[in-house]
Length: 169
Image 1 (cartoon, rainbow, N blue to C red):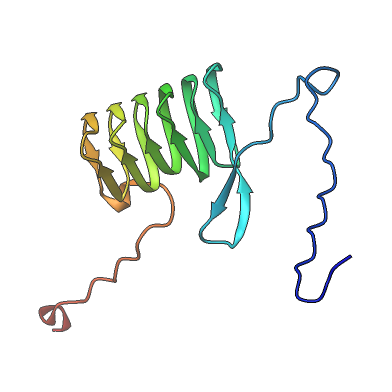
Image 2: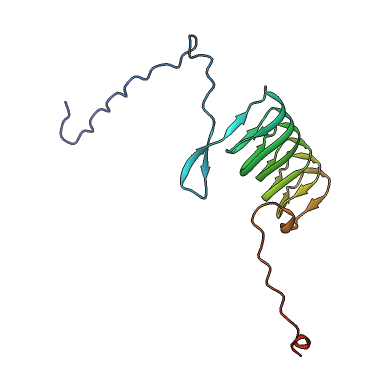
């Protein structure tokens, strides 16, 4: 009962079931982390290769990917982003829209938009991308090619050559 001028007592929250600690659902992995997409106002999910996972071979997909484990081979994420986390150890040829190296990468990157080697990142290989950022403290050995025409994807339109005045004779 509430008296005039008194705040009502808060109602108790409904009880939530405890997460299973054993049983048939205990082995299921947590859902992938949600990532905010700046271009589209919606949440998207990124695939995650955890610290204890090791993959050898060819990896391709149609979603963003974060690597915290070990990967050897080839990674192709056309139209999507790759993040190598601080614990990630990758030896691969990489093709993606955007790449962030926070861990260790041995291999070459071809990116449609940009590549960033973070302060915690180490990279040994070549980069081909229109925009490249090396953070203060990043370790890098290789070459950088920022020629936009060398990167796959939409190419800039070149104007047609104009005829010279001499050619009109």
